[in-house]
Image 1 (tube, rainbow, N blue to C red):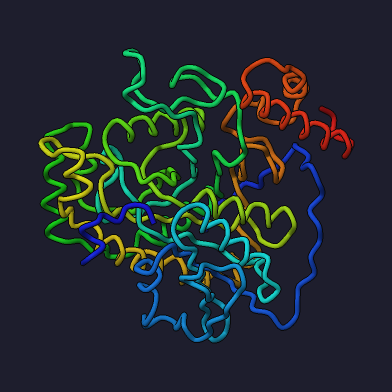
Image 2: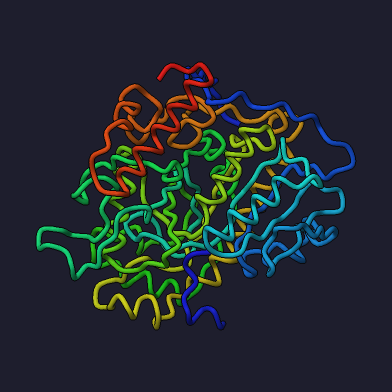
Length: 421
């Protein structure tokens, strides 16, 4: 969950096979199918109770037919919920990156589940950029960008020529490309699968409220916010992950810039969330060991509030005091749009989805953990001769030297596996 305001707390296509030329650091281990375990075809990933509860008591299936307690899940949500036949399951991570990573790790490593063919759909609410979409819209992401993983200065301490206190690692200017990567900054999902999900969800009749309609209208005078003043729709655009629940024009524009930089200009900053990169990292690492299939990940976020105010409303008012009216329809639209995706996958299982949707784009993280060549970030983030040479350079401050040592260790690991660096 990202965008829940305090006031609302109360209340198949032609597919081109993708050919990989990169070599993973290690070969993925073969894991035989386990007997006597639940092997869901579809896993819904919720973050907090309203997102989870919208799936309970529906006509299509009973997610509470089986409730499996697992060690390592959130104390608030200690059970994985599944239908009686085990075809559909739901895991509730808890909010923030730490909770998402911990819960998802416990889930994918549990011997009670076989997730090798499961489709995962992150299904939560989000803040929304009025330049791209509006309240109650349903968005599907190609990229998830961890925007707050940067140097940060208090805005009051900045020189006059700086527009933001966020500066990419190992640079001294907010506009520069980062020179250091931790590996979780960007995840790219299967674009062919995302487009199928958009097509399926587009048949939904989306929920809306009069309050949301009235608040949208306040954005109409600003030409840049035309999309924010329109009615809700289903669209493809990208999600920003940050543990910091940020709001306001300055921060939102700063993270628009971060999204552009990390995706080499191809990402569209649209929604704001607190968990997605953490969940994707867990699924990706599990794919490395053949426990999951990262190609089967869908990231769906519905818009519950704007990340910046309209003309005439202050930043504080926009986040803390104004009832934007987006929370109720955003929660409802998780189900209304999401059920179309779930049913589409199950209905087309034998003909299409069991064998998987072949990606037409690069799929994975910035380190090419699953192979291939990332179409974002700098090539120097990969294990190359340039990176190994940089690791030998002991100049810079303590944090920079730590980054150099990290690169050197990765290069040594690659050499031990016979990979040229």
